[in-house]
Image (cartoon, rainbow, N blue to C red; front, side, top):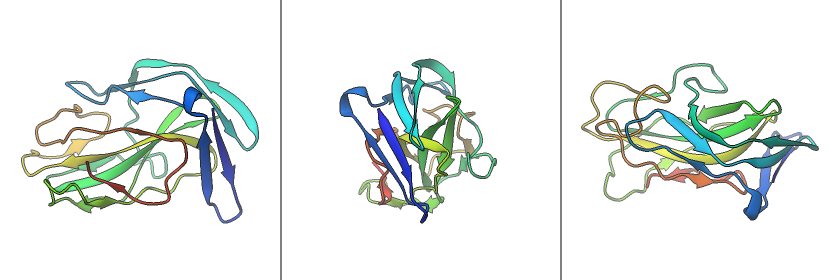
Length: 167
């Protein structure tokens, strides 16, 4: 179960009970879908439950801007998965950064702003290497498209206050 507390400074803290936290999976291979375990969460003091998802349709637009979430060669970004009170899964993209340290895995990917109307449950980075052809689009392009590095999901027990590092 996770808890979302929003303070007047818009700082959001998320806590999860490890045994009941969400598990985001399926971000690999020749697919654009995702899966997640069932989990409980809280928004503004109200409790909700999100059922498990198997082969779900990945959101294709940013939860903040409504724009497509894209990367081209030598770019990286952090993505945060969240759920609203209706159980709708949304994804939020952080700022796109230059990704050139492909062996050091130390590029900092800033996290996006997350509104208080959702509870974040997972985060990861996506790296588009030099062999990425054209534009890779979140939710439309395969997770294993040429040039895309493997995606390491971090299931959240607290929304991080530091950028994710490429892995």
